[in-house]
Image (tube, rainbow, N blue to C red; front, side):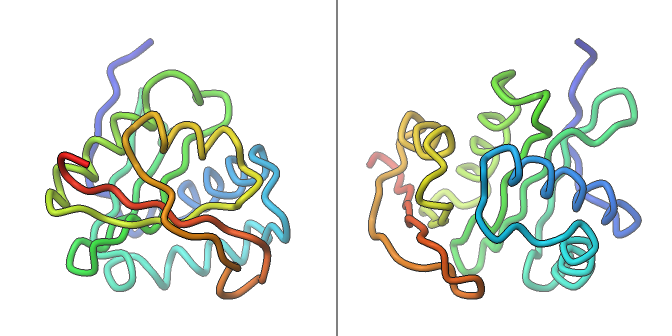
Length: 150
């Protein structure tokens, strides 16, 4: 395995970020999965605004994971790893970065039926805080929070 570089995303990488988002969410069985084109538009609109900080994991010139944060709001907006790279520590590295960037804590939500993601968050010390519905698509989601020392 090559060296993994964590670095800020570039606007020109919206396609790669959207592809990872679509592939990873599909791999997790997300209901009502938007098209890659919709996700690309969403990434382009969110970079620098809704997502003030986006970090990509790059290996040998290829983006293999990404993390989108909104530190001022204490929200981990998105974290996705290319499906063939899941289980290799990339998600943990990105989650650890989120903890460093938001040392006072943060929240996130995920699809309720995504058992692997839920187990990942719980192993990493996040606590389930509530159940609800996706704000745009209506499917069941669960909310998690990380607090330092929690």
